[in-house]
Length: 133
Length: 336
Image (tube, rainbow over all chains, first blue to last red; front, side):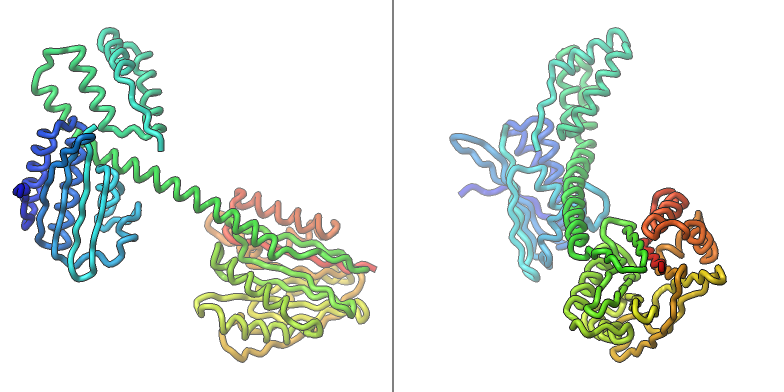
């Protein structure tokens, strides 16, 4: 089995590490500069959420190489408190940090697919994929 | 949302033209392109990307630091792009919400509409205009089989959707009252119980109910904390306040209301209003009730409907066509 490249998020500095690793994978896959920047920003947002709301967790990457398309899968997992009101968190205009463009709706926009599994009290797993254009 | 691809070729030409000539035309076209990009949801990072590509084509030996710094700028713009997208989605949501409210407002108009009755010897004028789309004021005329005319006027403190919902409730309750329930005090007591049971205590509803009897030429009325209206006495050419004491609806379950009776003669008038009339703002200050009376007096010689409309137009103008509160004015003029 392939060992998945993974970054543990324990402190703010680790967010940078996650971005860095994600960007390398994106480059390898042949993403253009704009998409690289978008992926890095999405990773930032996911890692930052872990750092701010769960304390610790990890971000790992999988490359998807299919006949018809290639892509990068970013998975963020934590065992934090989970999200109580998911539809609220996924709503535009909702932000704990204030300001437009931040949060999970931002990640959803930056990536091509977005999936979230969360249970109040048990943690959160977010899976997002970006396809090479 | 359709994404229009920014045309690299166009951009490159424009950039080249500008770099060579410093031509204002190129800048003007860049401005057009920028507007078009916003319209087509092209994010800033995409524009920067096109810029970088165009620059590289024009200057294949572009200094590394310059191209790196532009990549840096591209990264720095990502969040602006996201904010723009979110802003646009919020704007769409807002306009959806607005059209929903305007449908609701139309529905409310249909639900609460009341026909101005034709009563021999009584000239009736009524105007009710909401400050926003939904009206928190409500008036209704109820003709009795005995020839009497009931006039209900209510005002929810507050405005907008919650006020409008509360008003609909008042209207339905009144519709369900039996035909023989005509006495103002009884009607207010019944409505008080409905409001007390169904509406949050933080919401206040004031109401006036009057009953005109053409046979005895009397006007009986009760008030639940409603803004006092005015009587106009033709004989003395003077005004007096229509005062009746009573608690606002819903304050307690067993509120009692007094009923007063006035005799009205030819040429007299009854003026009923909500606080949207008496609490018109003039800059920082409220206008005085005396000033309201002056304006009403000025137009009172006109047919009742024309008079209420003139008074409304006067205050609308006075407040720069921006009502702060729902405005309702009813004038009843006794003719022979």
